[in-house]
Length: 368
Ligand SMILES: C[S@@+](CC[C@H](N)C(=O)[O-])C[C@H]1O[C@@H](n2cnc3c(N)ncnc32)[C@H](O)[C@@H]1O
Image 1 (cartoon, protein in one colour):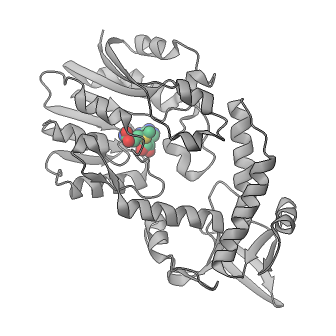
Image 2 (cartoon, helix red, strand yellow):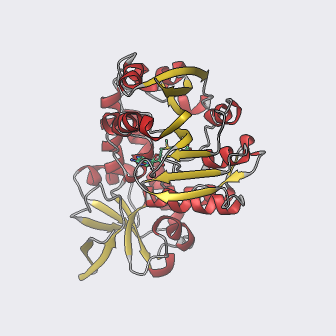
């Protein structure tokens, strides 16, 4: 977040730091406006003219909503996953062309705008020191995520205690797999457990609550590590859980190694998608290949996976079984659960039919 962008306003040269998603290039041509129809705005944005909104904040939100409505109403419903993703990425690039300026400490110049310092701190670690240009679409995402972060997600498997998740960290809001982890019989003995790709720390917390005394939770994302640390501290579990910023495994071995990897083998198209997409199932395959070397003699691997990639034609049926077998592991037991998806949201979703057939499983594996 440090590319400087320049534009001209009232015959003056102005500049700010680009605060958009690092995977999207900063706009090269910027025009300011405080009144424009959605149709005109879309016309300019499609020609790669980014619009810097100078009008009322709420009118800016309405303009963005009207732009999205237009774009979505004309969008095609793709049954092919890759075409659907491509369309999503194009839309996301387009929506990034409506900008707002944020002055140091989260102040917007637009009338009726909220102070967004706390929401920006959540994302960047501190309030902005410099003037930022940020897509309004992204800012609204930051504000929504900040509210969720404050509210937290109540986890039944933690007796209703809350897990707080900031922007960019995987949220256990769709938490059917948490029940599987809370109820599956632990290997015996079970003194040590590892939670690989801990995200919010939720699985490590469930294992700690089940009485496992020594747990190490790893993640390779800085945001996830900070989030897991905060949750584990809040839940008073720092004696039992050690958080480690590393890729995959810590050194040594464990009685239980749990992993809920990203389920979809595709390239992330924005910074926050890295917890959902694992290109080519690379993390999953590396995890399986090396897990056996880290198990104690009676140890188990618990792998949490949905079969959605199979329903989307992104992974051949039986491929997972083959990888498990090749890794020198065998299946002890598999417990399935059907995810609950909010019906209303499914309605327009191109992935709805895959979602309807999706099953999430906990695979209990041991060394062959
Ligand atoms: C689907 S999320 C699961 C988060 C959490 N365990 C849960 O169940 O809610 C996958 C997590 O794996 C992490 N991850 C991806 N690749 C990793 C790697 N090579 N090493 C450690 N963590 C990784 C991501 O940052 C993300 O937090």
